[in-house]
Each structure stands twice: as structure tokens, then as C-alpha cells.
Length: 221
Image 1 (spheres, helix red, strand yellow):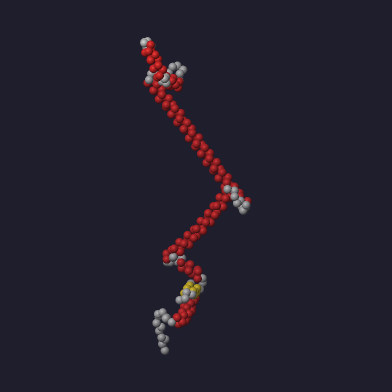
Image 2: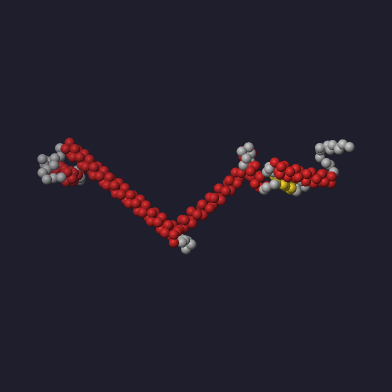
């Protein structure tokens, strides 16, 4: 008597569907076990029932098989990229937090804080770091001071040159107006004399001229 062929379609009866699921699940797992044993294959099966219940089988470790599958060259590009990026971001974030905490701890040590938890070797290492930092600080400070001194010297030389140039211009101007230096007289005194001569009050000349006019006297030569 031939076995009746079952039509492959969804079983509408809930009870019959659950019985069929249970039988075929056991048969599937049995076939997987036989395949792994006969062919030395690494197998992992996961089955979810209609109610969401998980059934799984693996001849080794389910996690290792899944990881091996994800790392396979043919599947590396089919990974869930958002999930992978999220994992990477989480790892980077944790690493950054750890690095920030380390740097903050080192900064407190540099300020002389929280030194109680350091052993002798760590204190000696910190001392060497501080000595090197202090040496570089002194060198940098010395370089800044030397640069400022050089800048002041350059500025002083520029002022001296500007002063000499102005003196030469004054001498040229005086020579053009017929003012000559007397023996032993400096250009500064000559400029002072000319300035005093040019500063005579014009009202004095007016007063003397008016007096001669009133008296009818001739102007003095």
C-alpha cells in the first residue's frame, strides 16, 4: 500500500499544526545530527514556532557557529551595518571615556593632587616628567626674554637712526635759510636761538612804532 502524499501548504487546524511542528522539528534536528556526525560538519539550527518559542540545535556552540558565519568572506558585506556601526561606536566611546579618565588622573598628579595612591616607582617617574617639563619651561621662558631684548635693541637703534635723520633735515633747512653755526655752537642750540628769535611778541613792535608816530619823530634806523 502506497503512502499518501501530503500536500505542502499551511495547516489550518491549530492542534494539528502544533503536532506536525513538533514531529517535524524533532525529525529536522535528527537529520542535522546525522549530517554533522557522518560528514563532520558544523551545524547550527534555530527554529521559531508560530507562538514565538525558540528551538535550536548545534553540534558545537551556537555562538561560535554564528560568529563564524558572520566572519565568512561571502557574508562579511551582508552584516547589519547599523548594528555593526553601533557596536563600533560603543567601543570607541568606551575607549575615549577610559582615555579621558586616564588623562584627568595624570593631570591631577601633575598638579600634585591624589598622590597617595602612587607607589615609589610611579612617584619617581612623575618626578622625572616634572623635571623635564620644568626644564623645557625655563628654556622657553629664556628664549622669550632674549627675543624681547633683541626687539628692544632693534627699536632703540631705529630711534637713534630716526633722530640722526631728523637732525640732518634740520641742518639742511637752516643752511638753506642762511643760518650758520658759530664755533663751538651745536645744532640744538642754534635751533633754540632761532625759535626764540621767532617768538618775539609783535605787539612790542607795534607799540614802539605808534610812539614814534605820535611824537612826530623819525623811525630809528
